[in-house]
Image 1 (cartoon, one colour):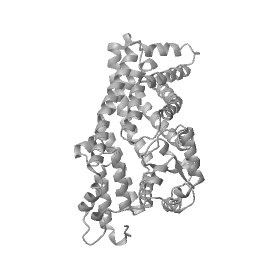
Image 2 (cartoon, one colour; image 1 turned 135 degrees about the vertical axis):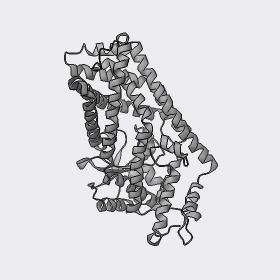
Image 3 (cartoon, one colour; image 1 turned 45 degrees about the vertical axis):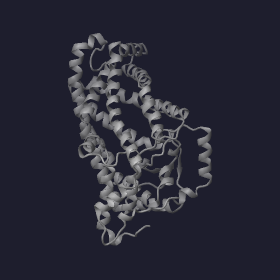
Image 4 (cartoon, helix red, strand yellow; image 1 turned 180 degrees about the vertical axis):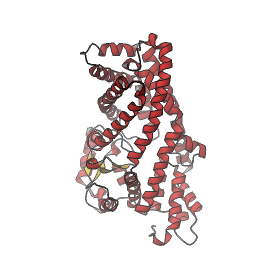
Length: 438
């Protein structure tokens, strides 16, 4: 769960000042937890019936809309992949990438400077080339499905901020990878994977404190029941955070989100204002229990290491595929060897093919971590109905009941139905200790 980029304007700043000036909404949620009749505790409580009672909260219109958004996303993944290949072909076939390299090599005499100069140009040019798809996917489509709240000026400003961050971090990442490629010889693909993992850890460390505030305003959550509950859960789970932050995601989106992110001194507990305004205290506890589960179970480290292993295979695939493509078309493209930055579009294209093939595996890795965090969150928060309600809210943009193969292939989270069923199973096993809500 994460917030979208934000760009202040007069209206959003005014709303923010109103919220800061009247913090009561942050102390007590304006929403009560309402449990459907078929899911209420009792001697005749049935897990399947309770699950269906929650799923039935979706109207036919809401379900059709959610299904359309999700299924359209599958096609967008395919079109995004093909669009990326087309951009790579354009840059190589018309020797645009070679021209960018030649221009970069006129700046000074140091290879590292040439790499940085190429990387900045490449990131800017590819951002411009993919802008039509980004505009449709990130702005028009989100508004079509009533998920976005941001006007075009705000959205475009966010993209510019993202471009700035991407140019800085992306250039550093490419400098690191190309330095490894040039110095590590035949085993570059192993050391490039190690370097990539190290860079991901670095960005995870600085992200919560230095990057996220570029896109959203973070404020300390005011004293009140919700803050007390979250801090109590954090202390009980040995999370080294001494504060809780909220951020103003409602300026961009209606999506609810929260996270426990960072490492060591940068660990931060954050939740967005949509979660605070649209959900009950029980739902907030369920969400925060899930996010704390990710932290306590070391999912950040584990996922980086697991994807690092996948990346080893990816760079090995690049080592194989790049050489064959270079032998056939390298002279026409003006690409010298794999250490030549002019070959970056080819490197990226081959890597994208590999990751498309590995989509079911990468999704399964994340999905397993999400199930573990779900279980942890249920146990630490003890709010099965809050958890089920949140799962239903997420159905605004996630198909509630995909087929088994569909879930395996496309979902990096458990389906909403499976999450509700898990929560109701937990509830069935803990009815004696669970206070009932209306």
